Length: 54
Image (cartoon, rainbow, N blue to C red):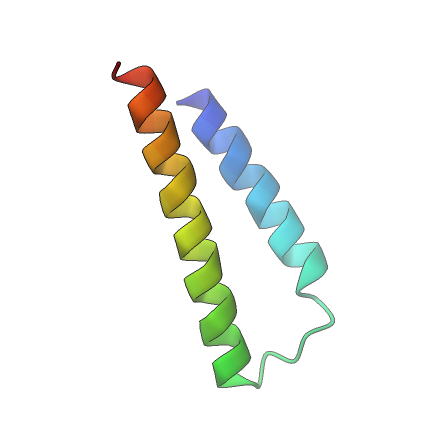
């Protein structure tokens, strides 16, 4: 569980720093970024579940 929080913290940190220069007014860009982030998180969570539940 701690690993998950660590990963989420890192993702949040990267999100804040990488997407700072991007215009938040662009709904399509924000939507795309959100979808990509959700997809990445889903993949990570699935990976963690398969390794811990084995």
